[in-house]
Structures are given as C-alpha cells and as structure tokens.
Length: 110
Image (cartoon, rainbow, N blue to C red; front, side):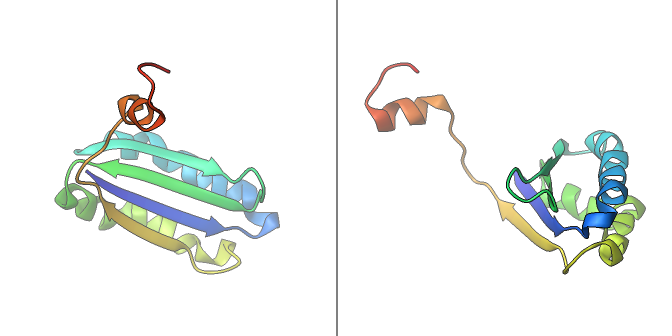
C-alpha cells in the first residue's frame, strides 16, 4: 500500500476555499482505480492546518492520480497557503491491527 499525506498551513481567511477544494476532491478520488481511501482532516490544535491522506493499492495508481487535473487543482491552491504544502509518500509493506496492541500490552483482548 502507498500512502500520500499532504499537510497545508492555510491562510486564515482562505480556510473555506481550501476546505471546498478538498471536499470536491474526496468523492471522485475515492472512485479512482486503486484508491483505497481519501480523507481530509483539520488539526485540532491549529485550525489553519489541513491534511489530506490518501491510500493507494500501487505506486502506479498513485502516479496516475498525481498526473490528474484534479491533483493539479490542489497544487494550484498554493496562493491560499502560508507556506508550501508538505507532501509525503510512504510505502507500507506491513500493517497490523488490535492484535499487535494486545500483544504489546500482554492482553488477550481490548
């Protein structure tokens, strides 16, 4: 699985515009081939910090998305930000669930 995380420090007066841009991306991106998840978040401590987190089946699927017009619109929103977006791409080779938490805590079930 490939994860894309984009963190944006939004100008306070542009929050609504950025949120509308993110909301307009979520549903269509979620329907793209290979997209496992696409979610937007606002930081609880700093309301000017927005994150977009996407999960993709393959790097090829993500690369196709990165070349899309929809993604270009997001990149074009830089004038609405205090600073350039922080973009991170992570390759996840293994993931675990509650069983790992239970094992680490020495418990059978949480």
